[in-house]
Image 1 (cartoon, rainbow, N blue to C red):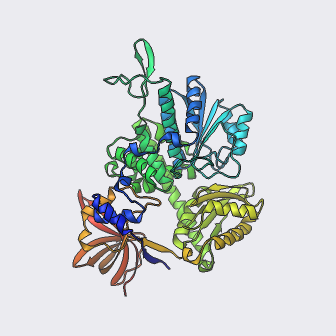
Image 2 (image 1 turned 90 degrees about the vertical axis):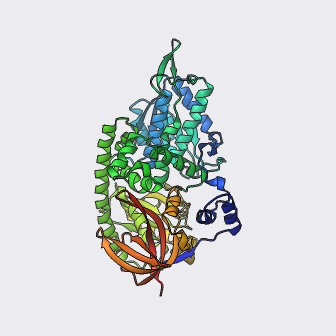
Image 3 (image 1 turned 120 degrees about the vertical axis):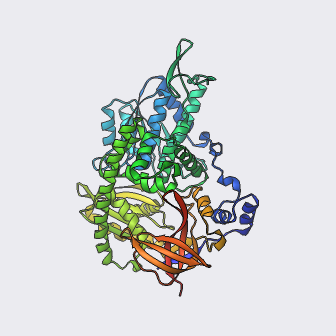
Amino acid sequence: MSQITTRPVPLRVHDRLVREGLHPVLARVCAARGISRRGELDDALSGLIAPSELMNSERAAVLLADAIAAGKRMLIVADYDCDGATACAVGMRALSAFGANVGYLVPNRFEFGYGLTPEIVALAAQSKPDLLITVDNGIASVEGVAAANRLGIAVIVTDHHLPGSEVPRAAAIVNPNQAGCAFPSKSLAGVGVMFYVMLALRAELRKRGWFAPSPPTPLPGGEGSVVSAAGRQVRMEPNLGNVLDLVALGTVADVVPLDFNNRVLVAQGLKRIRAGRMQEGVRALFAVAGRDPSRSSGFDLGFLLGPRLNAAGRLSDMSLGIESLITDDRGRALEIARQLDDLNRARRTIEADMQAQADELMAKLSVGETSSISLHDPSWHQGVVGILAGRVKDRHHRPTFAFAPAGAGEIRGSGRSIAGLHLRDALDLVAKREPGLLLRFGGHAAAAGLTLRAADFSRFAESFETVARELLSPAQLARAVETDGSLEPAYLDLGLAQLLDDQVWGQSFPQPMFCDEFEVLGQRVVGEKHLKLKLARAGRTLEAMCFNSLDPLPSTVRAAYRLSVNEFNGMQNLQLVVEHWESAR
């Protein structure tokens, strides 16, 4: 049973924000999310934390600059999700513009699993690299880095996942979550870490006089290109702001907390997309999704573009996704985007079948008596279990793992958690209590992955349930629909909806949701699975939608709702989106 709650608002902070010029509703919303000064909503790049504060970023920059100067061969080892793909694309674009000899390799999740394993090192060695650069992985690759070291291949690890008790002996590790790193933003996505390393590298190359002085008029060839000046070859300095669309996409898609630093990165990326300054692959993904980039939002990145890129890694090979992000050929980008769209449609079909099977398994469980959910079916698809775990977690409000076969008598699981249970720490506790049970594991607070022997599934489910029961209180197991309270009728207008749309919302900085009572004047099914509503409040009639729900509403409801801008035939109107309702009587 869900309970509608209201976020507390520090009144002094709210009043200060209003005095500083914020709209009263935006001031209330921001105060409830920990914003204390209007300046914390600024999104200028000048507000970013300096790259020098990210531990080992300057060391990595020196190693990369030396390798570029020596003409050494670099190979980026990517991850197979959207964060990994965008991080790889940022590295490929920036390093190429700096003059590096660079390629990439992304493991096929079904053959090699996750991270820089010894097997991946052996595969990489076939292209004879002098330097491997991991993106969105590597912090747990102790054996893989050791294998590379034995072959004389240096490794730079760029990652954001939580380290284990042992870290690899890499030439440099750049990870805001490693021991000793005082970088204030621990929530950088993998693409954010790579972007920071590229900023540090550009600063190092500037010190070495790598770039031509900025001329009063642009030289032929554009930024990052090699041109002839005064009888010598010089390189124009690239504008790394041009990859911020990729940084924004990977950051939102990886569902990392949108702290101040991440909000700046996402806001700047969205500004560039809305202005038409984006990679051809990003433009193509908007096209196949049927969305206008000039009105792009975090929703588009997280729920439309991200899933299409992720579909490549889930069902096929993420090289397809990476290629879409590094090509400058508009036709090629559109061709790949259409393939990604087809893969995403196939993913939805697989997911729907798995969801039906999960519903059958859940019907045999008494969720109210448990603190966790662990599911396994031998027919499930490895690439889709993470989505399934998220769906089950959302529906039943329990930390959830879903497992699929991984070959050789093993199963691979993906988990999603609720507030109050740090998933990777919970797995670490399971591993300590049950030595040998977890073959591999890693992740974050909200999401994690692991590998087990198939015969050990029941043992894991029992151990994880014990840990979850210890760590979660009954109050944390009760679903709370957090809202920003009642919205004064005078503010129920298109202007406020547009104002809220202009802000960057996401993980740990949720989109505003309000709670009020409405009279239900009408309701009808649209699109086979949604309800279109006509609501009344304080003498006004309002259009509303209740998505993915066909349960009829009573005559009067207490509803948790968002304001949205509905555009139809070139006209914009206010529309409420009902996220949760309960009878008001």
